Image 1 (tube, helix red, strand yellow):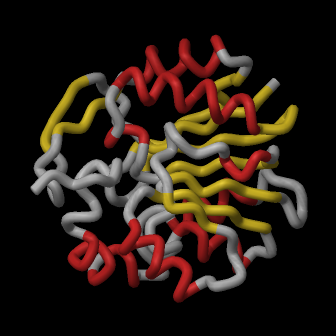
Image 2 (cartoon, rainbow, N blue to C red):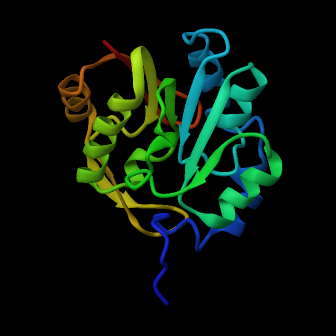
Length: 196
């Protein structure tokens, strides 16, 4: 039976995801996001794209006093987010379909999301993010430095990285400057950008 959700296969593996990454508050990425959040104004609004259960990324931001909004395409995973963070606005939608709460943000984080999307959707998402980031706003997303495709370890679906140079060009085309990159202990590659 075809999955009616645009969750890139994650609705089908939601229970496994929730039991694994969805419960680990000190999971890979939390410390990098916490460090990145220091570049944001106190009390900033942050959009977490592909927010999952909110653990560990949204949680790290909430604990630091940021106003977080989440978007994820898996109904089951969004329900787990709502159970954990009932006062945090979260939308069950594919990022390409969301209006991002019809507001602007000081920061946008997309940990483990971009490479799940088809290349043209990734480029469209960069444009959408640029449209909701305030001037000087920050974007953090993860994707391999190299271009290529490979199967997702949880879903088996094809993932795509545009690679460093294509991400840099796409960001610049939308008025964002790539201000840094980082690789964490799990070998995840981070892109750090700022809207000019």
